View 1 (cartoon, rainbow, N blue to C red):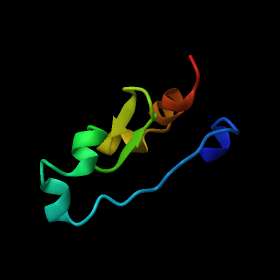
View 2: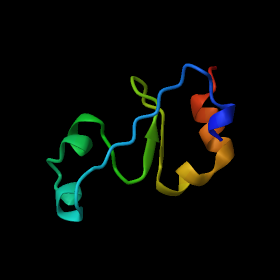
View 3: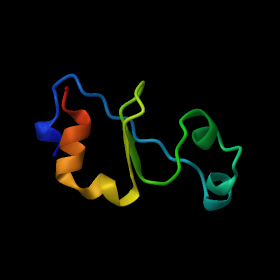
View 4: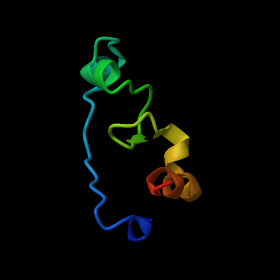
Length: 68
């Protein structure tokens, strides 16, 4: 699906740590980015995000990265 994304799109792959670290409610990813599950695709600077199984639905991914 990357070929359908706008040319200026930037994707960052980030590991959230081992299970114990991820489950910690004080984990920076949970606190700062408000992540609730992995994987997560988010449109940085907006509240828009796809979590877990939503990330594997091509139409939702296209909608997330398509300008309004």
